[in-house]
Length: 136
Image (cartoon, rainbow, N blue to C red; front, side, top):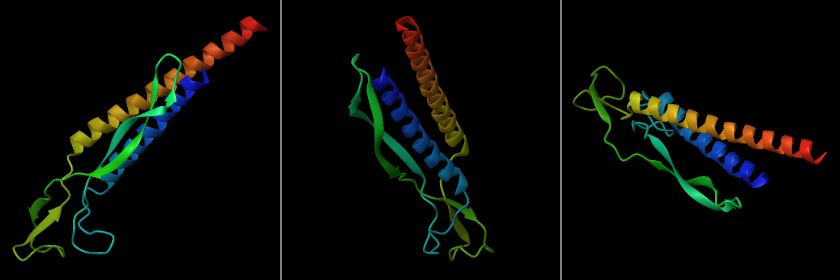
């Protein structure tokens, strides 16, 4: 029973990391400079999961862990704004190539997966309580 909780907990941690990357992408949709102050647009990030074979249940269930956080390999969106301080010689500003709809759909998926893991934890907890009632 405790292994099932470990598997669900690994799912919670993984989905939280995924949601953090999505929120970072949305927060930086208009960021045209990097941390060093250079005119380099923010690069969208996404999380890659992997099966965690160290977290297993007796029934064959396996946990999940973060394999890596990758940067999207996409060209920036060029927008003509000649008065912008980060505009190039032709008057174009490089903005991050982030699709808000895709990010919202991914956030919804991460949220649903998070809720599903919480549901499994609740069911596991109820089974443990009922088992103790039967044994008492």
